[in-house]
Image 1: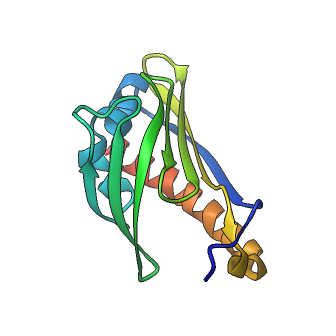
Image 2 (image 1 turned 60 degrees about the vertical axis):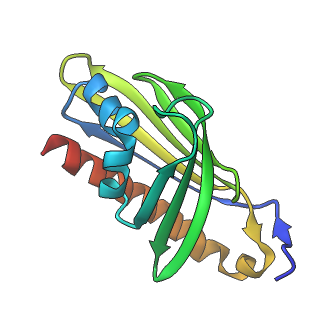
Length: 154
């Protein structure tokens, strides 16, 4: 419309224990990001590293997604990359943030992963649908951790 936004956003967070060591889980998500991200997030149709490889702090990535039949393209930047601990990327072209937090629950066998997706701002025309958007964001966070668990444990 006119690019008007609200300072309100929507956040979804979900955690799950994956029966693999933290380094295996981190490598699946961060080190092998380009191979695996479209697997746990099948909405991703295209993924391109815009910076020099490998994926690291300050890397820029372009993605094309199809969510509920709607095509969107965005660029994001890796803002936190701590091996075995945390991966965060933030939208450059859109106001969103994705965080993956890793914690060993048993150093040799289990990892708790917490995924958080934040829409940092909602367009004003979206405000009447704020509750539905919040539900969709929360459902998406739950689906993400379930997909990660199923893929990593298989």
